[in-house]
Image (cartoon, rainbow, N blue to C red):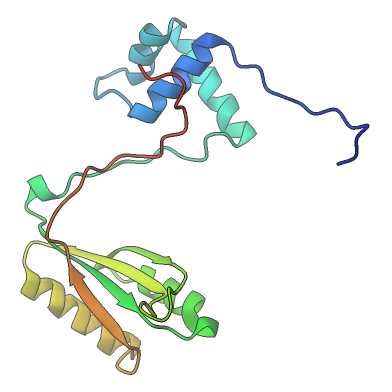
Length: 172
């Protein structure tokens, strides 16, 4: 960008700013969540829906997600499996692991040498540790991962889960 190009700063109406802050809190668990949000931010429902469509088109909203609170459902044997994968193979192995039915989450992270050589992480959620470990054994066998160093870290405490927070200026 050169000095002669205008800088476009988006001026957001207060009702849209309130809507953005409300969306971060999660959709209300009611039959008409858009209507409930509309009432809270002072817009008609159709404008809330139009605003959400516009934000998606603009790329401000990429997706709406769901946080499942799995512990109350009895899914308490949750293991993070960390792998020390050669850098040139991590993308391929990550794709392969992500197709495994037992793997609920898979992502790459940078190594933190010298203490943490692991660069690929995957979660296996289950109701019992022995079942989670059996699922991991099946994955290792099926994907021929016997030579890949890894560790299994079971969760011992659940912390609060929520989506991203981006609007510090106005919390409903």
